[in-house]
Image 1: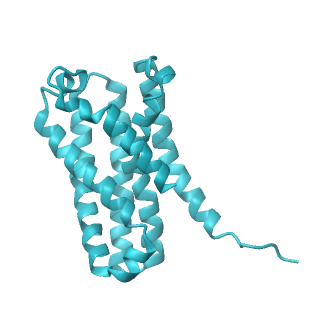
Image 2 (image 1 turned 180 degrees about the vertical axis):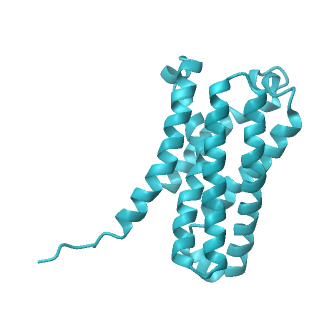
Amino acid sequence: MWLIFAALSGLVLLTRELTLLDPSSFLRQRYLAIPWLMVLHGVPGALALTLGAFQFSDSLRKRYLALHRAMGYVYIVSAAISAPVAVMVAYRLPIPSLLFASIIQACGWLVTTATALYCVRLGNIAQHREWMMRSYPFAAVFVLVRAILAIPAIGRMGVEAIIPTVWSVIALAGIVPSFVIAWQKLPRRRRA
């Protein structure tokens, strides 16, 4: 799963995000009016996406607990900055229905991350882990939406594809983690 997500992240980086370096690119022109908002959203968001993936490593957590904690706090601060700024970015961009999607995604990300922090501060590590499993997919919406829109047949549909793709991925980010958590708690073998 992590290799697939890494491949999708690389695809998004190469096909979309690197175009920001080209002054004449569509994305660069689109974000020209809000460069500081994009930096305040993009840098912490990228940090959260990168560090969050490592937080799920059992060996990293067991061997380097202090590093795990430090990376966790950077993830929390990154989410606390990136999520609200994403709403400001969506407000300034020309697709009004994505503003509401951005609000839902930001709230989902902030609530799940804050709950994970609350659980770990209480010493409830099992609940903390479950809430982090609910938090990270809200960060991953960024990559998954752009990877889906990179599919030529979907990308050619323009705004008509963007809106349902964003809403669908946000819905999955809210549902799939609970399914995975419940699935992990199922008995491993059948009873006689």
